[in-house]
Image (cartoon, rainbow, N blue to C red; front, side):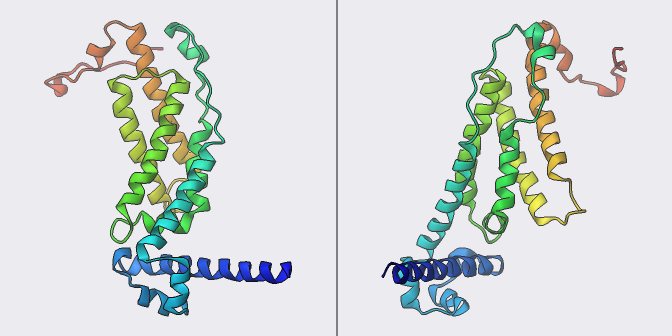
Length: 235
């Protein structure tokens, strides 16, 4: 009896997955909201009655897909341990700050690779779902801020602007990486190094502002950059 139940459950899951995968196949050719249940059933080779055993409509199907993707993303990020920032004086930044890319940077690209097909489809600017990107951003925002907390970055205007740009770069890099050929874009390691360079740079700017009183004026733009004297790299 249990074997019969298991086989029935397995078949049910296979049917649900076929509906999901067929839907994802159709989105690149047509905006997801304009795909009808009739069209989806014809493409999946199932009856409309079978579809309604699993989902109430196309929106319910999309919600199911997004909930699964967001849950996977959250579970991945929850493996990152929250670490209280070490407390040291700004003068010790260069010797104490850890420039190694944090685990949270790797998690994003591991997640995108694992969910490559669904992520590529749902983030498509023409036929995907803009609200899914908003939901993903909310997850990433939490863990980017946690990363900055772990680094000891203060909650100031510099951090606010950095987080916004850093968040957008996560998506830009992922979308380009997912849709480009292996030889047409940077490797994941190279992308992570670039993102981490921004992270280190933001923390370094904060360090210089705290330790060099005239640092902000030095960073200001001059009205006539053509006549600006050349700056020499200190030995």
